[in-house]
Length: 134
Image 1 (cartoon, rainbow, N blue to C red):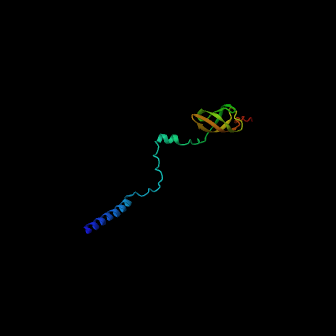
Image 2 (cartoon, rainbow, N blue to C red):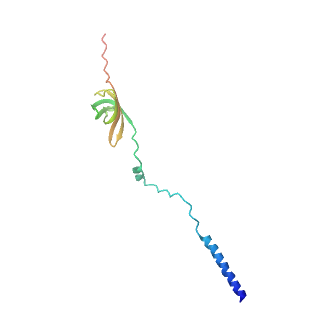
Image 3 (cartoon, rainbow, N blue to C red):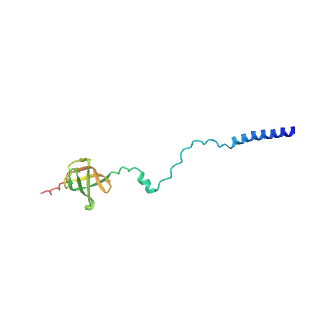
């Protein structure tokens, strides 16, 4: 009986030690710090709405002044008698006198469906040369 008692105690001790070792081995390692997963790409329509509005490109138009209201608007008759009407920005730079008939170059930006002049350069209307008399 002594022999079987010693074997039983040895088995219990062995199971206790092996069980402790196994318990340590099954413990999950601490998760390594990770960066958060990237957000899914937004739908194309939403992506366009989320982006900040780009500054509109400056465009240029030239022609003769058809109508002009100082500080408010200018109407320019360009190529093929195409008329373009511009609102004048409060901080617009005006060089020369944009009188009716004067040739102008207007730098403008689109603001929705309006065209807003940011710079107007005017030159005096060309005078027709009088025919020379002999």
